[in-house]
Image (tube, rainbow, N blue to C red; front, side, top):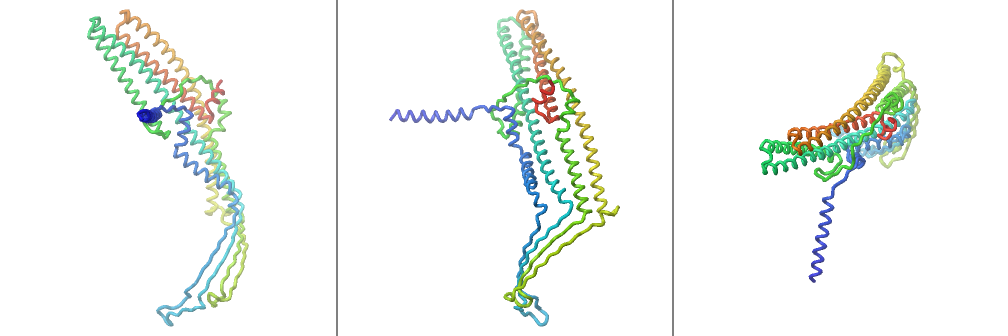
Length: 443
């Protein structure tokens, strides 16, 4: 009996222990995981998907442009016309009550229908482009935030190392002061150095936690979740040829494609409006109606009629210069001309952006090389200063200066690498390619 109770207690603790361990597990996020979560979480992207689905449904049912209009109507007159307050007074005429039923069909044809169909298909292609653009923007923003947080993690690690160094030096000075080997000034200087390092570490940690919580909110993850970012900032040098990239990738830019689609839409709209307004239109209609003969009542003899009509309408106003219809068609042509000018402006701006980013990449890599050299010099200077301080040939203030210089050099190198990576991402986005493709093009 005691054994069974003990076993039950063990199982309870085991189950709760498993749950505690599972609940305290750290969530590991890679860049791909983060992008996928952000895409699935985006309300804007979900709304775009709804619009895209509707545009796709319309493009798959273009036959609706030619589908005839049907009508079915029924009526019952249970109170025929009669006087109420005037002579001869209210009299219900049973033979005046009647009922009716009718059915009609009508169709209209004009030369603008084919262009209307093309406009529907174009709207779906534009929806696909807008959806992909929104997704790429989310991916770019998440990628930049992810690498920025990685840089924050590395910076915190570096500051933690500086803090650990300052605390160890403080402990050494405490022992030395107790043994009368250093004075109060050296002790206070080491204390100030340790507190400054602790302050810098705390500020960096707070900023990182705030940025991380914002990032998690974007991914739909509860804030204060234990998260580890799996990745590293290791930029590779790219030697881009701006003119070659412009020639190869400029036509594939989303904004260029979108502007060309705008021109195509305006061209189709202009043709659709022109043919609809100027070309003759044909209307065909047919109808059937049935009901009791006149003045025979609801149960009277049934009679019906069938009718059909065919009409051809030839517009005149659009052909006369200066009429409202003609002015409307001219305004469509003016919008088309402006759209073509916008395309030239968009291409010029895109070329300038690509050239600027390529130049920034070259200059940014030079900054990385200088920053790496500064780190090497600062690291060696610190090592020599530390050895001199232990031998009594270097003062503590000089050692503290070399420690701060090393921390600053590491931070600037980290920022230079992050800046280079962000410029690379911007260039890849400007060319509408992924990083692997950009790296191959810059070899």
